Length: 418
Image: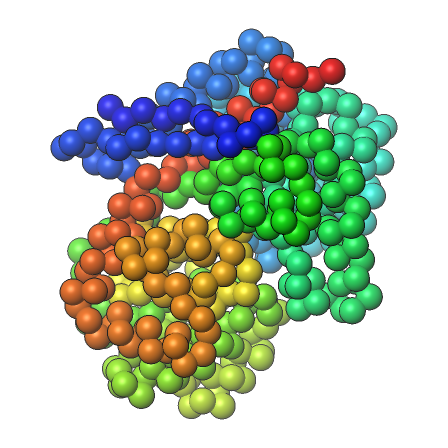
């Protein structure tokens, strides 16, 4: 059986490394079995140390209409932690129409505060000890930090998916963007200078060190997992099908993908595309599609259930992303689990989720991106080569390993806690 061990790239949070599975065993299952064993050891150690009550602090909840990869990441970790008998609570902002408290997959969800007020409200609640004091905490640092080191009195760590940097100006008004930039690039380096910070890719780690100025010895990588439901199917679409998925928001730059698809269709007239997801950019993207006369072959079905998502990945010939900045972009490795390669922008995060030339292609947006789509869609040998690489890459990633790595960081922090 394959082994999974938790490594450290410094003094801080662990990196989960995996060895190759046994010959003849399903690769993803082998990695998952080994990762489960590793997680169980870490969980047993946590319980022995009295780390029974854990809290995850995040900006948005999984049931938020604008939830994305960060929220799914928090959910997967919380549910796996809870499966080991840990008392897990996830504290997030409120979701319109939903109760303030609920239970999901074994962990509690506490939704209080608005999109902005959740930050001061969480800090004040933590200082007051409302809801009890957890034995350990993990903050999901999603651009705007909760400044956990200033108020947490228990062992704590942070998980930062990526540095927002210039994207603040894309997603917020100039005044709010300035607040975000100051918080992330000026205040956070002071507050988190002695904190254990995890991230999901080496390129994001580089940004946290070079742009934010965090101590490289305290910033480590814990890769994103892939759910076992993402497996290859039997048949591809009879016509070339490009798939994309994500929140329809400016930072994803789906308008650039639409332009590239329109350009690629001049060479591949039978090309079809599906862009799954929902968000504030829908009207603008619909107008872009209408202007190009592409309503008949570019679909915007909105958010889709898991079975439709898996089926679409399996039928697709290639997954595409023109995003401006990512921590990882788990849609790439989800599609890879279905044996679907990727053509994506050469950005932070994508450089880790894609092995360029092996599981997909890293390309600059524009004419080169459209040409890369045409190349992969029209070259069967290249597409099959990339598909095999994408599948192999995804099969080495498990959520159990992610849960083990993050929990291990809290355990180590508790062991060294003053």
